[in-house]
Image (cartoon, rainbow, N blue to C red; front, side):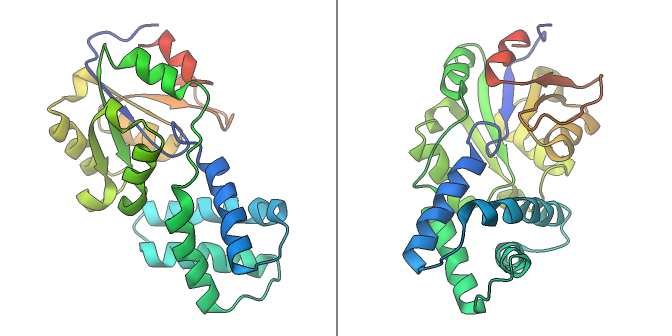
Length: 229
């Protein structure tokens, strides 16, 4: 079902266009080698990824700051695996992770094609909760920055999705309004419900294959956005 009267399309970046899990895994492989950390990468990622997810939830809810997120997710993952790592090394790994994350820039299948399809028809924008020091690097090095008219980062607004303030800031920056805009993202709480709760239409990119209520618009691949736009 095509959406009518849409002029502005807002995308989440991580887990929606930019293949965060794949790029993150490659980054850990690189920084573990650089720092002589001998651990099974697959086992580490199986433990780290759900821990990271929970830390990001706390971060979105303003219950922890960026420093606690960056340290805590690594500390807890190594603790769970019973690997003794000095705090100084955790801080170094945390810094190295941010420094090297943008050296890998795999996008989800269809990302370039759907952006090329949408750009002539709509103004495209980014709304991201990711750290400001890496998000622009991801866009630039993945060579997709030129598709977007505006990029709204949670750190520039002072709040994170699903807070309505970040959506309103993005709309104002884009000179858009709720009635002619749609939000596309993978996170049901932050991207989809955050947008819907403040009156902005939304589409869930459900690559996680989670259960989604019937009233929510869903795509399984980025190519499927053509059904709506």
